[in-house]
Image 1 (cartoon, helix red, strand yellow):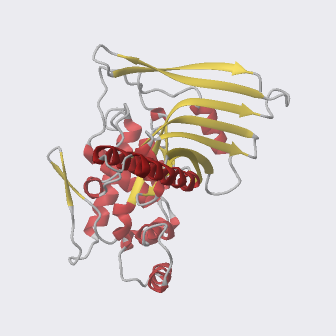
Image 2: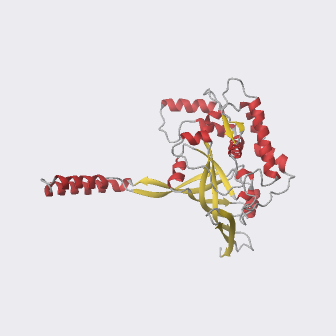
Image 3: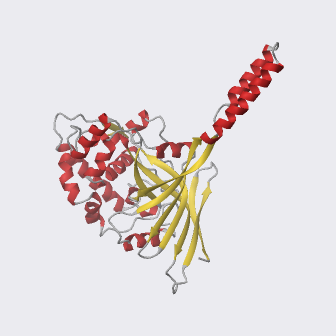
Length: 367
């Protein structure tokens, strides 16, 4: 099957329910960053000077040799490239498409941050660590990373990785739960569009013959409601009594449409608080602070910068953690002796190399 709960997901969900340390669940994630090794650049320059000196004395009358030495010198002067771990703290948002059977965890990011370059340069490999202090449980997850980005942003962001291409099931076929999520999202977007003023320009995303309005204008009319009741809470009211999503095999599989990806991007965006959404219209992360930037940041923080919230939407993306290994440690279970389980995903491919089945191996090991 390609749409079923991985064995590590049920205990992870229970750990989420037991989490009482705060409204958010932060976790640590490490990716790989490609950098130039500044420490070796000076020694490289010194050796280059020696090569230049030798080449000048040995080939005074040999222009060909001088040309060769010149090319060698230019090559050696390049700073060596190394790969280093890059660790940060992020906030867990949800399972992709609010569907636990996707087995894909998400967090959100500013597309202008260094995270995107890390994902593109090194295949998006990651290792993440969740620790639940109340229950003394730890989950170490590893796998690959993909990013959900709007089509408009993808066309203008040169360093953006490809939109997620894992074997994800369309919400329209995997059960009543996610169908209702989509239906609720459509309703919320229509309410949002109907309250926009005539001065705001609407961008249209053409997906499979259906025009879906993008949110290129203000969401102020929705903010008051969002501050008191999140989108997830609204969805829960609609879906709490519905049956679990059905399992999907390769014969009934269909990938998400562009429209469904668009709605998922909107769901995460609308779930953010007003303060969180304002972060995405700030100047590019990492810019050196000067007087102009200081004034702009102050205006944004006070909400008097004259821009709508959704000016920051093109800078917003969903990072998807496609997990293939899990190391679960429980320090309090089994009479306080603890327990530890290892989970590993195995992918079976068809004749044409496409993924058609995912299976998980699980093994208990010494804590």
